[in-house]
Image 1 (cartoon, rainbow, N blue to C red):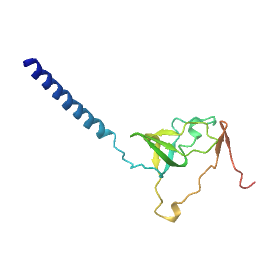
Image 2: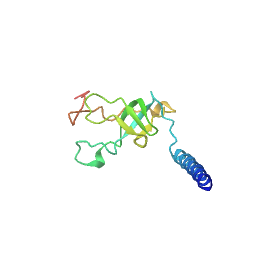
Image 3: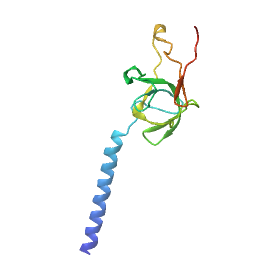
Image 4: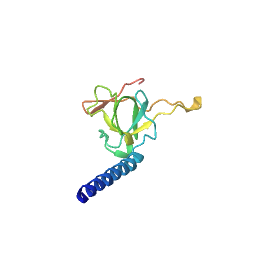
Length: 128
């Protein structure tokens, strides 16, 4: 009788601890940028290696990509160009939501229109 009561008490305390741990974990796993499928995102170049000789000359963010699928609480699948030789699933920390400019003067043309094909950057030449 006493043994059964102690087992029930232990079981209840384990369930209570599990609920508390789950609550504390989920506090940190919120989506502060409110990312969802179809949003345009800037991809941080933190873990992407390029062919540039100096890292400081590399772009901080790559061009806009669209989210095609959400995977779990912290990862998203992006629609990457065909020539990119990297996996298309990224952590939410490597994505920055694109904000529309408030004024017309804030619209800028992207600096480079390069694409990575077989680990080499290819550029479109507009004018010589």
